[in-house]
Picture 1 (cartoon, rainbow, N blue to C red):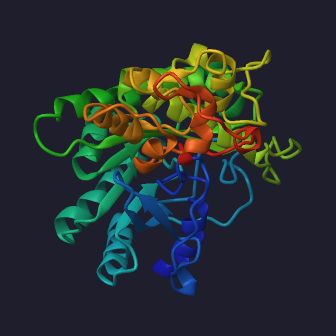
Picture 2 (picture 1 turned 180 degrees about the vertical axis):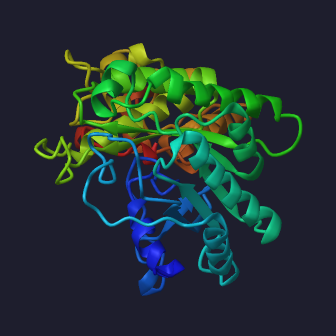
Length: 391
């Protein structure tokens, strides 16, 4: 019979493909924190709002699953070692790791066992034990299962700082190929809507859990346009905090084992475009898609947009509104606000003025005017591919 650490060594790595705040702004995986050898691949970094980085225990409640998602290592019928925690067993282990200082948060997900309702009950029971019995005050991210009831979504949100449900695909047509037993609207999207409604109801009563989702990218022929149209809807209508993009990698013994993995750069470009939709006031229609509906891989989408739209019509930094400033490479939400504040004290006339408030001047210069004049720049400094994290 396996003890708790032996189970964790199975169930922690099993959660490795679940995005739980362990992805940097451009989509790059954060390095794992230092942990004892028997916790390797069980503890990941989380980046909280404001940029603070904390170690979190990341695990499944169970790796048994009755679904047959065609890409998944734990799909029903696949020959793989499995394990299951009882709620008290997992809560007690999480508490021990928290009190020892090895983790400051917990991420709870699971394979589907006995239906969505039964599985959600196990996640809720674990979360409630952590909060009430063990007085856990750390960060808690809990999954919502396909098929969970509305009341269960509410109860999960009662205990968690963040909840998430993986849409996996951008629409019903793609999901039917990727995960044939799941209904896009009935099993998945409806529960994200419930979470948004419940979060809105809680907005005046203290803590309001944030909401995320995750897509599998590149397994069933979906375009970047499809993924970003759905992401835009979720940001705009459901208050999504973040969309995660998990690049497909073939798993032996699954129906999609012969497909090639996607290029990491595609995942990276999707993250960049996603942040343009969420934080930079871009519309999907403005993004630089090719004829097949995919983003260019050789440059970030903000730079591609600016090269098409701003080279002949550079932005006057002293008069442009915040929305237009955000279109300039090298300027992000924080530095756009600083420009607006600095203009109240006087005109910006030199590149050093921008540099002093945090602008990435080498990226911005080809696309801006300072007091009516374009500052000389070296072409080689801005034509390459740069991550959006540098804005």
